[in-house]
Length: 319
Image (cartoon, rainbow, N blue to C red):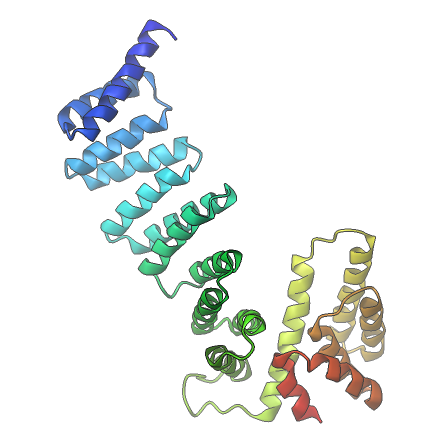
């Protein structure tokens, strides 16, 4: 280390000690000196942020904290300070985004406890944000807290429903129901999401928004299509067997969308043989069998679909 570089390092260390002892003017002088020789060192800008915050200049402090986070490559420790200051300044949306960003970085770095802390701060600031509850549910499942995970899944489904995103909400409720199939709160959330899907175009929050039997069957049909499409979008396509399965599934959805029932049935059957077994595929196939008057095959496929609670009611209405 050269003599001049050592001088700037010393200025940085003295500045950090001055912060610990609340000697703010000395800290400011030291960090400004360090900045001249260490313009890319995050600790310098973090120190300046701490100092200006103590000197009642939060706007300048925020700019230095942001620079520290940028120079550190998004180091979540600096991003948390950005988020906390944004929250104090009343910039809630930006604070939530920063806490989510920090939590995601902690999670990726293998620090689930600090990740959860960041997401928890975001939830306190914006308890209606679906993305926050999605992350907290994931965290709770990892910790083995099933009830905690379900609580956040229900909150996520409610948030999605309020945004009008009924099909994703139903998928989240399905996830919760798979964890606690006998829980009354989960079933209430499920009822609301079914109602949301079935009465879109109406004001589902009003008692006048009736759910007719045909609406429920249509909702289940749409949900099945959404689940199968999402499955394809999320598929990692690992191996030839998975690629073949997904190819048949794409063909089935294509033919079904163009009204070619026979070709869609054949493609669905090939997809099942290739390993596709979600209840949605049996529900879609059962409806197609009914359409071409293959009643016994329809009954068998819909019986398999009815193992899933979301399709059970729709299947009962078809009998």
